[in-house]
Image 1: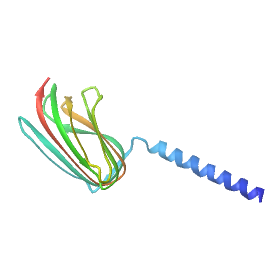
Image 2 (image 1 turned 180 degrees about the horizontal axis):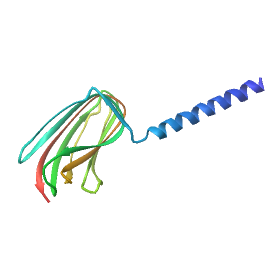
Image 3 (image 1 turned 180 degrees about the vertical axis):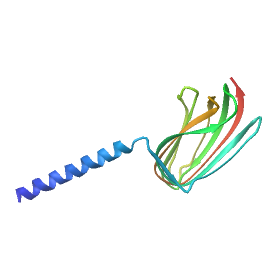
Image 4 (image 1 turned 90 degrees about the vertical axis):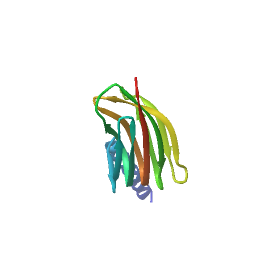
Length: 144
């Protein structure tokens, strides 16, 4: 009996170590399926809209624009049907200017800014077993 108990403990610890190692190895990876994006950009601003069937992990996304030195005054709405989904708007140096996190039944919205650096405004998405994700960013250009 003592042998079985010890064996069970060793197996459980080994499985736990494997799981932690797997999670650490995946840190920063982002996998999404069923993504549809649309956008419209004009001289005054624009919008970006995304629908994602399922996603997990974290990645930095970009909105390609002509020119640097612009600030995008941005209003964001975010919804998720399962799991959690987080959006962080970033300035030109990668600093977070707004964080929104949505969970089922708890949509999020807010206003922040992104800065165009090297012809791209960036934001970070983080999904934790997210399904049925929808977000929209409406922005207006403001010179810095």
